[in-house]
Amino acid sequence: MAGGFRSRKRSQQAFTFALRELSFSVMPVEAHILVTLDEPVREDVLRSLASDLSEALGEDRLLDLGGRGVLFREKEQDYNFLPDRLPRAVCVLRACLLTPYYGPHYERGRWPEIAAALEFLRRRLPTGRVWYGRDDGDWVREVTRESLDELWNHWAAHGGRPYPLGP
Image (cartoon, rainbow, N blue to C red):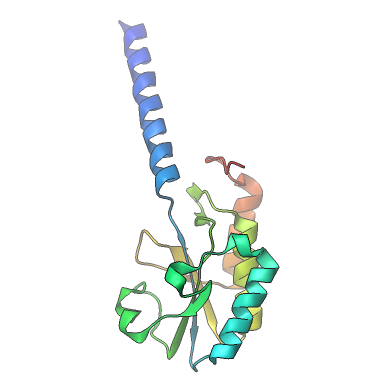
């Protein structure tokens, strides 16, 4: 009887694991990458930033969300749909990467690529505040040297485990 119980338990665990992997592969958690600024960004500056980010990461690594571009200004009427912890600002920019979110307990995205985008935005928009978080929750965290170090340490220890990144 004990052997049958263990076998059934292993089957249930395998099914649960397969179901979890299927749900992650079908609908991954996307990354919120946002920048808040106290002054508006001119359209030509925004286009230049988007072009430079595309060139730096590779245009195939960014997502043109609904034809709005890979880096775009959020419309004021959409501010209510932004994460609650994001401070309201005169200008909110969003960067859209193809890679899913990366963080503790969700090691799916390509962290070095995400970190490059975060650093690009921090350095090219020094008067802004850069924010990073998951799209399945209503939170973001300000990107600081300390928060980047925490995520780099996690990536160095865990990489893409427990979820393989694939090709």
